[in-house]
Length: 450
Image (cartoon, rainbow, N blue to C red):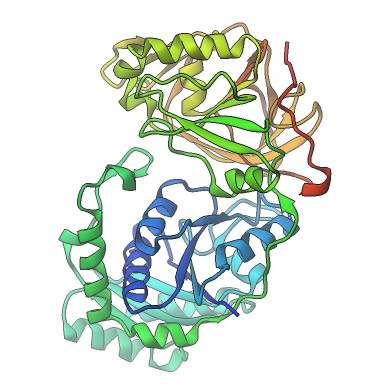
């Protein structure tokens, strides 16, 4: 049976990723079969998890995933592992308002995960004890097994905090010193992608050394608890075809492993290609999927990728093409980069986007489909999220793909576009609102939108 725990914090920037990666790397080199997962919608952290463990890291989302799918993905994440470490997002209790919040706390209570808190104690001492007390008492259903102090200034600093926390029955399992050299570089959507680091293995080695020196690694492992979840026949979305051309490079790296894994389990073959390498989707595929990523950082190169653009156009004459967020941007007429320069994109849809006019779009979304497409049939609801800084500066004349609702069920209006076989939206799909079982999973590859 796999042991599991959740690493959480009071807020973003507390050190969750530092502790998670350090523990993963330390356990791996000690011979522990360790795997990782990420709470909520996140593409970047799981790639670092995979680099640290050598195994894929899956997303666990209690808001977007039906309960049966959540249990199945959790079981898959823990498969062939002695220990599963789940990294939370934002603060432990942060999520939407309503019956399902999507918070790390909700995930912990749903899956029975014990919680290891990491607290940034810079600028405070005994007050950290009050923070621990508040988090331990806020929701009595949670099992907070211990805490790790981050950015500790001295041995005296640690002793003051330990003394304040002594009556709480929450063991202090580590004290990570202040060290700017362990920080990973960031950009507008979070950390710079794992695939862009030349020395990531060396960085993970340094993190493992740091965590082994400053934390009770063995004690943390002993406090993990058995995860009672197992894979099932439930998948997130039906495959859009039997052979799926999937854009895969530094500009198109954001697709959830549980989606691709579900398609493969349903019998589909994934055929990667690189738009940045000026490759077109293979003509013998049934559908093409352009994931999100960072096309705004590669707009000039994509604009010059004539084989990719013309080949995608030919493919779209007879086969479905779908773009999510960054992929949706590339399906438009043009993309304006941060400097204000416009770059010609594929023009398969009529909108245009700008990264120069930045505005944050962030949150859980439900997409009610207005027409049959690769995501599902008309009227179906798909759960997911939106996270980008790009502005839609020319809405275009295409028919809308879906009506969007926010995480609390409020309508955000029509969104996305569809023309012929081409569909696109800023919305990232996580799962159908109702369970999709392998035995009854249809293919939407031949769906034509108009």
